[in-house]
Each structure stands twice: as structure tokens, then as C-alpha cells.
Length: 139
View 1 (cartoon, rainbow, N blue to C red):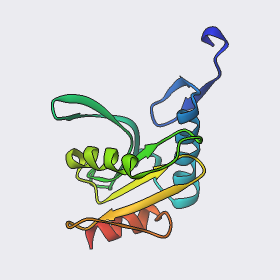
View 2 (cartoon, rainbow, N blue to C red):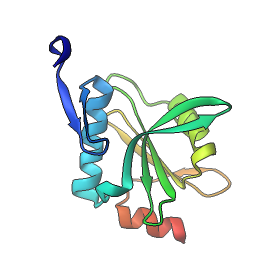
View 3 (cartoon, rainbow, N blue to C red):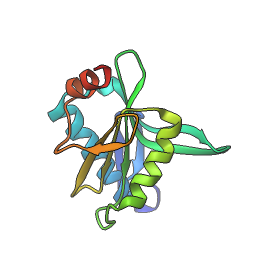
């Protein structure tokens, strides 16, 4: 390990990464989506590149439907970062490129999910399973 830094293996990217506070949140959240909410690992991608207003950006996680359309993008913050409207403004800007129907935000302690219905976002009471995410996207 370089400089004694703790590393973690990211199965989505198939590589070892330095375990930063945000990476800790990402790894636990993706594990929860896969193991408890039925998200197929092959439909979850971490650090997905995109171009926003001519600038290269990265979505923390993108969840794809089985026909490979983005259905959800996820933004992570460290556990000591409060989730505010600024975080949702950031992910909504990313979504102007991705075009997903769902946005999720987590700091590892609190998780939020909202659905875009064309006119705006409405918050859900919990995190949807993969099947719920995809069925509601199509409906």
C-alpha cells in the first residue's frame, strides 16, 4: 500500500482504491444496493465520466436499466457533510446530462431518493429496490 494508506477493492471498477471517507460511503452504499435491494452489480457503475457545460465531470455512481439507460445517479458525501439543497443542485446538474428518473444522495448516515417526473422532483420515503426503480421508470 502506498504510504501506508488503507485501500479497498471496488468490484464495480475492478481495482484497489485509497479508502477515503467518501469512498467508504460509496462502498457501503453500493453494497447495500446490491445485497439488500437487488441491484445487479453489472448495472451499477462508479465514477462515470460525463461532460457538463464543456467540463469533464464524474457521477459518483450511475445505475442502469437492463437496456443500459441511466435510471438513477447517486452522489456521496463524507459522513460529516450535511446533505443540503446544494448537494441536490449538484446532482440535478449532472442529471441534466444523464437523464435519469431517480436521484439518490447519501452521507453514509442519511440517504435520500427523489424521482423526477418531468415537472420537478418528489422525495420518496425510502430507497427503492432495483425492480421498483425500473418498473416505475417505465410506467
